[in-house]
Image (cartoon, rainbow over all chains, first blue to last red; front, side, top):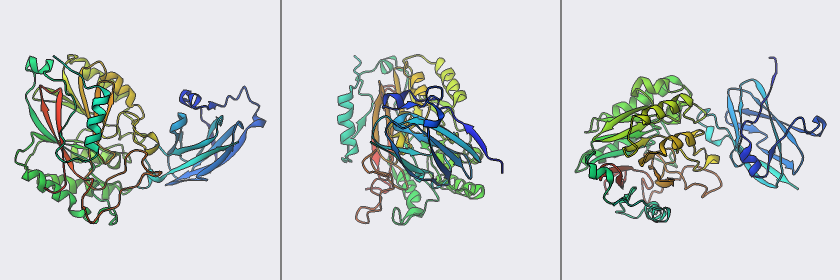
Length: 124
Length: 303
């Protein structure tokens, strides 16, 4: 199957900025500085479900939805993206403070939907 | 004279109510002699809120009586000395299934079961377990529209659907419909909103939110006497957004923990010593012309 890569703009990031994060601006940061983390999403899990990031290091989460549409939401940071089935969605973030930030699927996907979640752990 | 409940008073009452103290009657408005009553616009009446039936749920450690819980609640309702004017079902009538046929079987079972209620006037809305996998298609076949408005004894009821969109949102079209519906009303009209998910951000990391609920609250905010009743969180909960009180109801299949009281949201295990603890339904007594509501929390079985 042709692998489609979708670059997802994070529409909502004001809350994330308030929380100490900001959207990674492509124009401002050379692509070589970006750390890429590959993830998959399927009923009812993300893999990996725990991701450790270094504070201050820009990261792109490349998330492939394997089986159907899902969502990716980090409520504490005001970040969300639609994950379209069979596509790769790129979520760009820069962790600017340490801590643990939960993410979850916010597109209802079935009986295990409420368990489809994970954590971003940001360390110094 | 009209008196508004301030946040401190509200939280005190909410604390009493959530502590499960028997006999607490929670008044959501406490506005004293209201303007609405003075105008004599609405009559006193009572309705029931039944929520989160989750028919089809199977987990004996959580509810070993899953197959009879609904029947017991219906028997309790039928035994009430005063029957309600109507019963509002605030979503998740069924537990989700990927199988469209099984979904319809579950919806049909609930429709048949609630047909045993003495009171025949029912108002339905879906929860995400009923409607999010097929955008409400099966639900509509059994229970009709997923968002609508109706009037009862001078109170304007607005039923909002924040689940048929699997992203847990109302959507622009429904918000426009809400604004148009509200535009016909006097700013002092008594309004009750029935919905499934909380319209405010109660616990977004637990999926206890409506993605665009703020737009609905903004549309409601100019109206003086608005009260919201919702389900989804399987527990009694009371919160204000500005002057608008939001009341969550217990479920009728399993209870869930208080927001952020545990690291992970999971159903509360069954306690054989106190069967059906945390489950139940609510009566809502409209008073003072629909700007004051007395709430009573009732158990699955008659105590």
